[in-house]
Length: 412
Image (cartoon, rainbow, N blue to C red; front, side):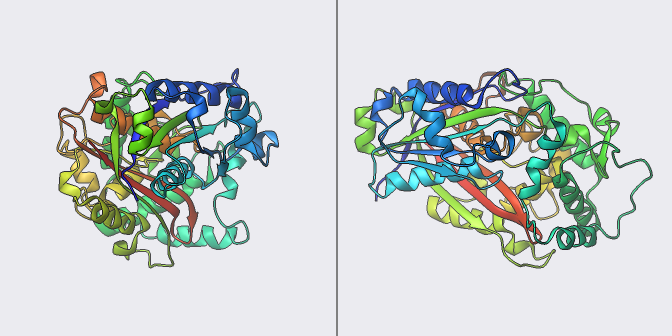
């Protein structure tokens, strides 16, 4: 067992790339990560390739990584294809870290790539339908309808246009949190407004337009209390990381001072818990394990990237990670604690809401942001003096929570 380092990272622009192929995005992310690490492609000893919807969108149901990476010289090594819903890229990273940690390789690649945009809108939105139990769709709908009970839904607050089924799921989370803790739509709008402002400082973000709280509240409805600016878009993009042990580091031409240590990498699946049994939330349990492994606590974190597929996601995950008290996620945002310059800057990248959410690449996009912040290279969105960073990336739904969640802590 040995320390594992992140020697190189990369991220393409997240957004709408109808004119680019999945292979094209793969090559950009791969070559940029190799260059950042001072690594020749022939030095890679294993690759973990994350993708969710290429089979659904293009019919490439199998050997996606082998097909996408071969044109760029990745051949003759283990290539593992990874799918774990929206936590796919973090899972690929976790697998690469542990492959190196186990001594199976000195240098490994984790890469996540997604092409979701299509002229076929029905196919595009139906890509999400396989991220929960397809044999129990009505039961799942009933569970989230029950979760949402007790909160009045205003007339005209549900979109007549198609949207991902996961927005109904997040609406259930929202209304439950409103009922249990008094969370307000204005607090959620404050989270979204903060993330949109952060995205104006990130040239790789899909959206780079600031929204005031009032503008978020006035946005087109999705399903109460969510409006369009509170929700992540459909995105294309790729991100990658080169991980290595000390022996691998010696072989690379990377600047050691720019290489970050992986202090903890944890994956936790969900469980059959009660709706309000928050201590058993998968992200809560994963975070506790990560803090123990890293020998640190929530108060030690300088910057966080969390899975804000909606503004409600950021509130839930901040509380689960212990970065604020249970029920205080919304008020903490109102107090300015989670914006740049605040107590715990959260999603300085713009988050999924603004940076974008190409689901097979999202988790490595978070890793890219963490490393960039810890290197002091985040420019206008830099968290001053950042030494420790945490990310949380969730995927799918099983029961009443994420099917899987990944938590990573990295530092100098």
